[in-house]
Length: 110
Length: 110
DNA sequence: TCAATCGTCAACCAATCGGTTAAATAAACG
DNA sequence: CGTTTATTTAACCGATTGGTTGACGATTGA
Image (cartoon, rainbow over all chains, first blue to last red; front, side):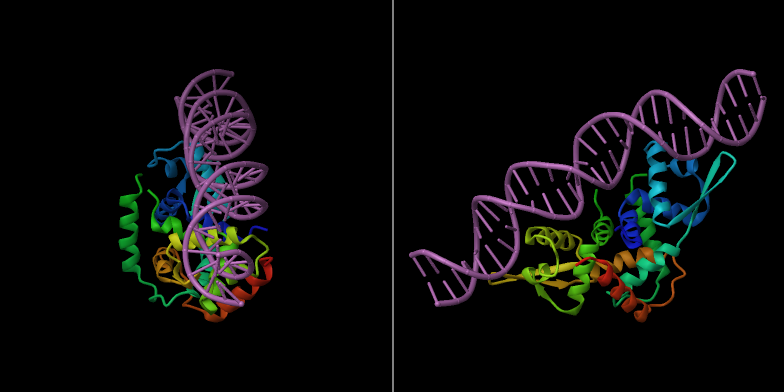
């Protein structure tokens, strides 16, 4: 049986998908616009979005011929609870997060 | 290029490996003892431990013929920072974590 | 109506994954 | 010494992954 947690962590293990989530943090986007910065076919991005959607990390809503993707961080909460159990983590540190994203966006050859 | 974050999330995406981490939360263990509760060959567990080790989630130290596995939650911090950026998460809730572990240990057919 | 756009689907591919068994290495025991 | 114990390695297997291309259905706009 494949649990939600399996799906969430597997979804997060791919840098393209993490980059997509980071983009969606800014704003909701259509599939084509999500795909634009990547050197990869639209079909590939479509698959990534399906994986994110199955994991509950994004929601997709079709309006006309455009399918809008929006972040749905609720699935992350479960994973976060799991991880927190292992940590003496600092409390939420958004500065650290900003630095992290900058680094990721630099590294991921978008 | 495979980043640390890729390795950590991929490692966490398997229920056997999460169960191993949960066990190691209690105490350090030898490889054979880690393998004992699972219906799986020792070689398979050895591979899982290698994956956890490469991700930096555990450390292994050989003393005599026994290889001891201990939790190393430092790698989780990085992943935690990443995830926290997406969340309006409640502050660390260990009660929720305990419930979570109970459920996981029940579900994972150990 | 007809062409362009948005997105998915199907078929395919090489690489990786999670497991197996059997053999190999290394240390400890009697 | 030879045997048992602890663990990894190697070869193999079927399933999954992350990508491709090309065809397709649905919606929009001229």
